[in-house]
Length: 222
Image (tube, rainbow, N blue to C red):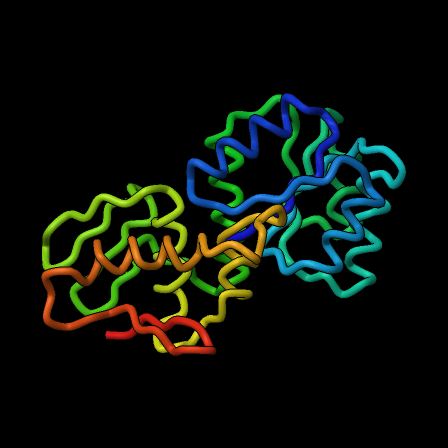
């Protein structure tokens, strides 16, 4: 899943970004409200993390603008401002959740997962397809009971496939949800990762789960 982080403080921004990358999320960052508005309205995100005090367009105004622009993805607002009035102002502006600084990354991650569950109706703790399973909490992957060791990027790619079973996903769709905005579409990185994933998931099994549709993309089906 792809998350936009809107935060002008470098240490906090890098803290959040590194933590989310370790959890398998694709992340983009914006340093001010104008840049954030452009990115949020031109890219497909699953969730937005928005700091209240950012340059050019502050967080409250930006949140209202995004909702006016029909951007309906969950927004978690971050701020050093405490108090009920500030929280109410953030929620009234269109935020789905509100977290005060300083905060533990574990709490932010739990709030992200809670918002994604609401967005998707239900976000299970484990994904299964045929005899393949992916535990979203522990990142343990097993096929026919045998554990498969994947890299963080391979895990993110597998999760995206398993959330879209029986559906052809294009390279563009994969880029939008698994890689960040700086990915160069002219490279063959996606194909390389899919080949690595296919070897780990399908090698040694009679039934293949990852399928290529030339000119269209890839599909995972049981």
